[in-house]
Length: 116
Image (cartoon, rainbow, N blue to C red; front, top):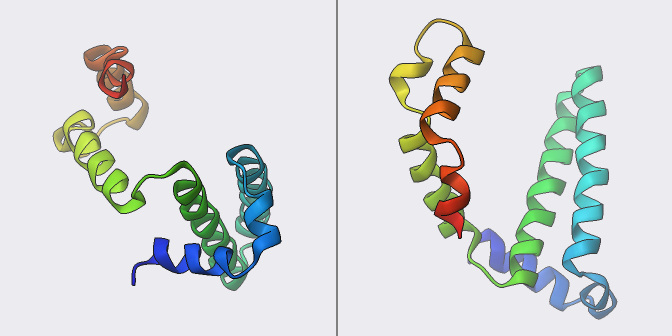
């Protein structure tokens, strides 16, 4: 069983959660958890950071379940896209912002067309 299936089983065993889990509500919860992660990072509590990252992953997987896509496939596809877009040689040395600027000049709105 993968993580996405584990999250689905958790939700299915709790019908009132299932009713509440709309994409909009899950995005709201993700925002709250992200704020908690920022706070944990700012105070440097590694154990708390770990829990907040887990909460975010859990909610992101639940969002994938609700919308109906395979999160692992999406991450693999996005990773492949990032490998093409953010060329390794641009980020070896020099200024990070200059490298990002170069990528934007090359790609423009290419990502928008890719996802259409």
